[in-house]
Length: 410
Ligand SMILES: Cc1ncc(COP(=O)(O)O)c(C=O)c1O
Image (cartoon, rainbow, N blue to C red):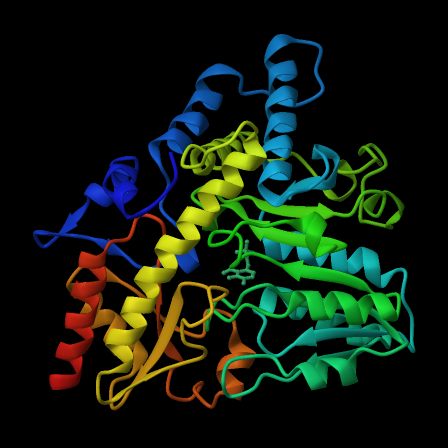
């Protein structure tokens, strides 16, 4: 079965949170970029872990062995989700930010004064802060400029990546504007100078099939709570790369990948839920392998979300007094996340009024603070962001459009 418009009704029945009402109306969860709702299959997997084999790892007894197996199975599922060669490339952590800080500390130990790191003005602070901190060690941090159309300037990227560059760290898709960045260009340029490429795929992963091997990334991070799973961060590291990095690590901790960057005890129950989330997504796809089903499902989800987001974009951009930011939806490579500015209405006020009607949308900068500053929107309180997830409907988009229209008429 492939995911399409006809799938949504049945998909919605899998998400218990969608039954919630507020003042007599169903909640419209248009807040997916900050974290999606969770299907019962994931909720049940987490509860099942606690009921059945809650234990620490590497013990000599049954529940511990089962925990080892479950975590391995979750790494295999995530490898299939990302297109990684094997489970050995998949590390888990508290969230993307924490993993990225751990990685930045390790990579910094291999760099020194005169080395450079390239980041972007469009990225979430989780993929800027850890690298900006390297400035303290004499490592120059260069930022690829954001253009007013919401895209990164490719000429500036060419200028900033040079023979001193050791790492290029950029997002795959913007959580504020929905722009899909030219990662192949960043790969080509970083390859030419022998620099690592790190991709923040947190906002891309819920919306498109990912193929980390084709992307040829050295590191790629994402976060399961953005794709219908629990709060767990994921790091992919190219085969052989993590094993040599000087990560923060206890003497007693396993030195091999993928464990080398995993400090302390992981959240086993949540990791069990991550596997369930990948399996859930795959259940909407076709094919003989988990990878084939994931890719097929994500293609269907991408098309569905894109058409819904495009209809919101067309409707909202046509309203006098509304500025829809970033790129339109002519290209299929556009994440289904739309931010707007409304003349005379602060985003926080707009989100509050819509929230009173059970329409859940975010206001602010969503930690893409530099981008919002560069667009001159920080002082006005940022933007109003709507995100489309697989369970959203045309009716919800209609409610939102009516709500924004009413705000303009106040
Ligand atoms: C694009 C992007 N990168 C990174 C992060 C940080 O992820 P985490 O909350 O797992 O640290 C977010 C979270 O919103 C994000 O949207």
